[in-house]
Length: 186
Image 1: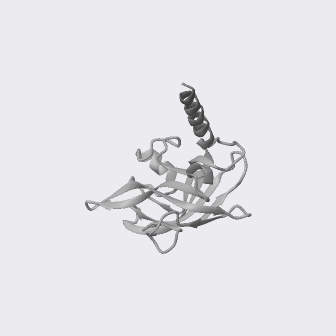
Image 2: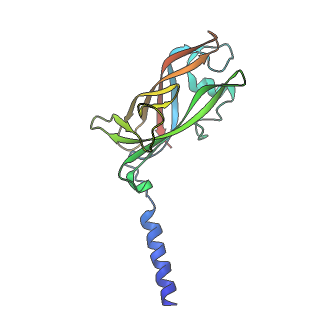
């Protein structure tokens, strides 16, 4: 009986010590998009309206069920979360994909190791091997991270700048543009 009680106490302490407590003053946590703006006006949904506001295009077309849906997100994990010696970022981002001769919007999820510089910029590195691409800033064939800026502090936004290839239905051609994401803490 005494051993059972001790085992339960040990298990309880183990669970409590391994659970990461969210500190509201830290930048670690889950972020949702507040804006997704392209450098150039493009039509990513095929409705005939080219716009720089990609988040509204996704929302208006029904490809995105709202800012709090979790379809598009950016999560920042502390080293303790996965019990490793480095922080990580996990993102799920929209992109165009050709499927059965049709252009569709997909959502690509990828993670990387991150090291925070003093000015708030982030250095990305591989969190698994072998690497898929030549550089850890490349997330997908058509998605390359230009800059990721973490503004430390309570409820500070995270800024993500991508060089991304989209199909512009108004031009009926693939275009490359910078895309600026602003994420806020959920």
